[in-house]
Image (cartoon, rainbow, N blue to C red; front, side, top):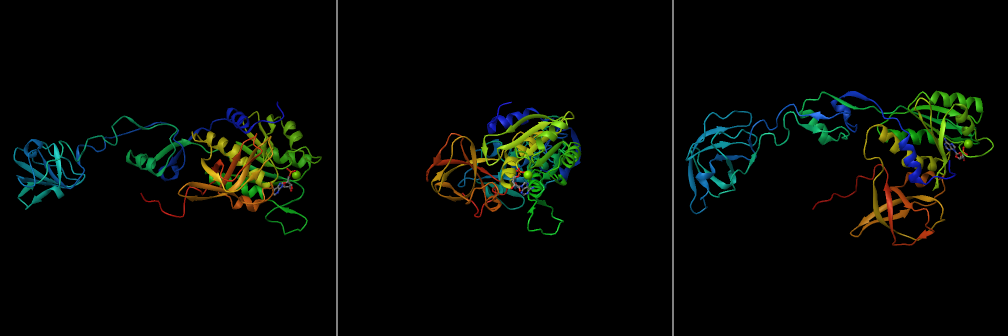
Amino acid sequence: MTAYRSVTEAQQCILSHLPMMGSEAVVLHDSLGRVLACDVDANRNHPPYDVSAMDGYAVRFADIEAATAAAPVRLTVVDDIRAGAMPKIKVMQGKAARIMTGAPVPAGADTVIRVEDTNGDGDHVAILLPPKQGVNIRPLGENLRNGEVVLSKGTEITPGVLAILAMVKQKEVAVFARPRVAILSTGDELESMDEPVDENKIPDANSHALYAQCKSLGITPTLLGIAHDNPIELCAKLAEGLKYDVLLASGGVSVGHHDFMRPMLDALGITMHFWRVAMRPGHPLAFGTSKDGTAVFGLPGNPVASMVCFEQFVAPACRSMMGHEQLFRRTIPARLGHDMKDRAGRAHFVRVTLSRDEHGYTATSTGAQGSGVLLSMAMADGFMLIPVESEGIKAGDQVTVQLLQGTDFQEKAFYI
Ligand code: AMP
Ligand code: MG
C-alpha cells in the first residue's frame, strides 16, 4: 500500500472493488433517472403502417411529376382520410385522397403533397409543385420495429427514453437497484441538529451535506448520527453502518491521538485499500471493503474536503453500482480570471464561479479556499482542477472546471 494515491489511481481502485447492484422492478414514472437492467424489445411496429407526415393529398407520383405553378396537374379527390381512420379507396390514375398528418397512406399512392403546394375546391385538387417521389411519408416501423431491441441494458432513463418505454407499454421497468447508503459523523466536538446550540461545539454539517449529495444521485441515505471519539461507541456505529451497501463515515481519519477510525475499521475486519490521496482538499481519505461487500469510505472531517471527496470518489462509485456508464461530473474548458499561486505535489480542487461571454467561460475563485470554509463551497459553480505538478496559473490561462449539480441551467435562453 503506497502512502499517497493519485486521484485517478484512487478512483480506479474504488471502481475495481465495488459490487454491482441487482435489478428491481419500478413503475414507469418512478424509473426516471434510473438505468435499464435489461434490453427492451419493441412489441409493435410504430408507425404501424406508412403514414402521412403532412396535411395534404396522397397521390401517384407518376401523375404529378410534370406539375408546375403555371401548368398545375388537376386530380379528382376520391377520399378524405383522418388520423385514426383506415382508407377505403385505392388511389387510381388521375385521383388523389385528402389526407391528414398521421393518417395511413392509401393503396396506390406513393407520395404526399403538402396542402400549401395545392389548390383544392373539395372535389378536385390542383397540384402546383412536384416534390420528390415518396416524400412526406413516414414508413412503417420508422420509430419501432416489432421484436427488435429498442433500448439496451445500461441506458439511463431520461424523459425521451421514458416516452419510448411508454410506447412499448412497459408499465413496470427493470432497473438497477440503488445502493443503501449509511452516513456517520464522528467527533466529540460535534453538535447534532436536535441539540440546543452550545457555543463550544461545532454543528454537524457533514451528515447533511452528504445527505444532499446522495439525494442528488437519486439515493435517500440513512443518517446514523454522531459517534464520539470513543473506540467502543465508534465501533458499534460502524458495525451498524456495515449492514448497508455503502458506509460514509466522516472525521477521525487522520493520525491524531483521538482518530480511532483506522483501528476500528481494522477491528471490524475491513480490508483497507488506501488511506491517503494526493489531493487538496481531502487527502485523508480512506477506502475499504467488508467481507459482505460493503464499500466503506472514511471521509475527511473538514466539510469542504468531505464534499470534494464525495464528488470525486463516492458519486462515481454509487453511479457505477447503479449501472451508469457516465460516472464523473462533466468538465468544461474555461479561462482563469486572475493569477493563482499553488503548491506542487497534490491535485487541487479550487471552488470557482463561472461567467460566460462570446469567448467562452471565465473561472473565478470563490474566495478563501480553506477546507473548512463552507461558504466558498456553497457559492461554487464547480471545481477548477489544478494538476499535481502545477505551481500556479496566470490570469487568462486555460483551465478545466468540473461542473457541480445545478450548473446545467443558465440565465439566458440560447436561440440560434
Ligand atoms: P477530523 O478529520 O476529525 O480531524 O476533523 C477535521 C476538522 O473537521 C475538525 O475541525 C472538525 O471539527 C471538523 N469536522 C469533523 N466532522 C465534522 C462534521 N460532521 N461537521 C462539521 N465539521 C466537522
Ligand atoms: Mg475529529
